[in-house]
Length: 228
Length: 228
DNA sequence: CGTTATTTGCGAACACCGTTCTCGAAGTCG
DNA sequence: CGACTTCGAGAACGGTGTTCGCAAATAACG
Image 1 (cartoon, protein in one colour):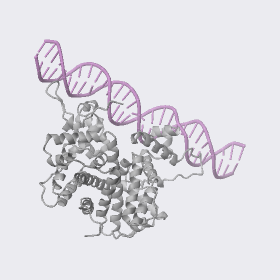
Image 2: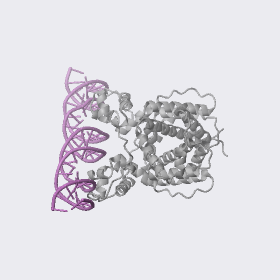
Image 3: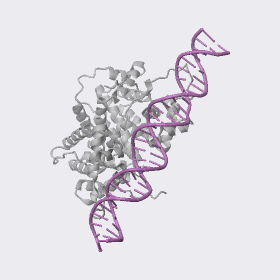
């Protein structure tokens, strides 16, 4: 019923400039302010009013650059994706994919708000498409079907974000809640396998970076293994 | 600095009953109301006021059952996890894990708000621990280290949620935005691999259920493959 | 049966939020 | 110079999570 206009994504909604009063700021400036705010105080602090205040303007002004808060989040996520430094493909594909993952994790640890956006709002902006192009280039010689390559890209991003989110949560107090209940459940009995796995010494747990790369390389190896 | 009390998870914050005015509702009732609301109108509709209205009370009353909206979300997620019907372990582990994943996907499609919670708030409540126990039982005979089994559980949940989220997004209009920009980027040139992969016929794409199980079994096979 | 202790219900209020309306200001174009 | 177009942003609307304070309801005690 409700007309449902095509509704282009932010990056396709260009502003026809040249006539009328010129804008005092740019979309990039607004995005940068939002990113800075999120870096310092978390995603919840990214409020139209607070972003505007950081730019020295009123909240209503932001709607000249963005159709709403959601646009701003999309712009932030793609801006973060600009942080990848993608070398020319060289060597086996798994090496290239792991390098992408390594950078992705680093970016997410630097921007703690990113994992949530990547997980719940998997939108591709200009930099996201560049990243996809890079991954597909790495896999150009791989015999897997097109659909599976797209899946590998999605899994790469998703697992990286989930891992980073966990890592960040471990730093903050978020982890303790979960651990507290798990410990209680184990102590209360009735979950022998959980008790066994948690009770056994976790000997010399590897550093996060190593665990991450080991895990992801296993996942990608399975996903991109030759048919049967 | 700020004292940082232990802050127990919801499930450990029991109410000592017996004395004083008895509560007119239960935590389970509040949770059920929130779930019903989310099923019908999405997570954003789960508002303290609206949940309360559904119970015929005032918003402030909910704080007798829950310390805040976050508690409510945790309760909802665990309540949804009660929907698993876990058969006694039997047969190869991969079969059991796939059955868990199959049910997980079904639950998430029935509760479209679940994937977001699972992805961004991976908290284990009573039913979550039961699920973990089941998965670890399936893997009891597997030679992998304890840490890797825990990782397999996390990956299973994460990938299932991400897949379900995608599937749900495809139904709604969310998908079109992303597709619109991708198409533009391809048309503008400069991304030959993306163009090739998207341009190639996606012939007879399998049904979502099959694609999901194929993908997940590949991932799990890689993750739980014997060392080297 | 009071009386007291304890707990619940919840209206009112607070600080904030995203978004829209409106209109004056600031430019470009003919 | 108008005419036109775009921008800036204060004010306002309807909504949010959460806190406060107090009346009401019950249990336990004497």
